[in-house]
Every structure is written in structure tokens, then in C-alpha cells.
Amino acid sequence: QVSVVESGGGTVQAGGSLRLSCWVHGLNPNIASACLAWFRQAPGKEREGVATTATVFGLPVIHYADDVKGRFTVSQYNNNNTLDLQMNNLKPEDTAMYYCAADPAQKKCLIATMKDVGDFAHWGRGTQVAVSS
Image 1 (cartoon, rainbow, N blue to C red):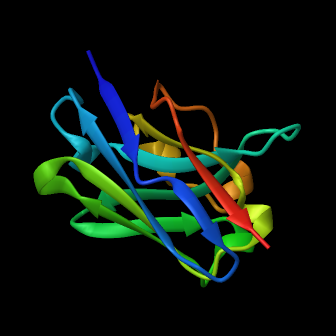
Image 2 (image 1 turned 90 degrees about the vertical axis):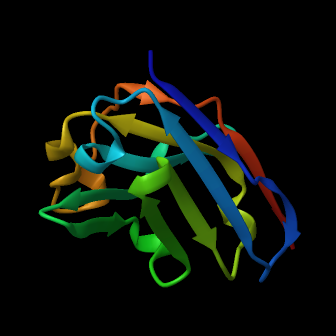
């Protein structure tokens, strides 16, 4: 059974920073061969992909949504099965529930843009991020 657990959400003022963490347990063999992602969903809006990451032939393959490029950084730590999302210069429009997701099919990370990201097999329960103006 695969478990995905997020942590690190909170409330910050615009311009501030937060770091989200995600622990993925139970993927076979481990997250090094998987596709990992952060999604978010704001009230009244559809879920959207924020970033995807995979380790392909030992190198990171990362995609970001256009509106977080330059502000968010995703990091994958295969040795301890964790995935972080560093969020800087946060804006009120970043307010949302953030979800970590994992899929054993690494090809799901081989996309052209974040608009091409599909569904994932395993999801966390989410962590709330609120940015005040």
C-alpha cells in the first residue's frame, strides 16, 4: 500500500515563503523510478498541476506551471523518499489546498507542459496554504 503525506502548509503574508514536504512510502521499488507532482486546488476552481519531477537516467526532469516559474522550486530526495516544494514570493492567488501525488509510471512526467499532466495513482490528503495581501 502506498502512502503519501504532505506537511508544511500555513498562512503567510504576500511576498513570504513556505516550504512544503511530501513523504511517499510504499512505491515499488521507490520514488527514484516514479513520477511525482504537486497539485493545488483553490475554492471554486479546478485542480491544477503546479510542478512535476522525475529522475531520468540520473538527471532531474522538472516542469512548472507558468504562473509559478521563478518562484517555486521542487526538489526530489530519492534516498529518503521525500519531495519538497519551496515557494517564494507568494501571492494571494497562490492560496489553495496543495496536494502531493505519485505515480509509478515515470512517463507521466515526460510531458511538454504542465497543461499536459494527467491523473496520478496515489494522492495525499493535502496541506492548506493561505497567502494574505
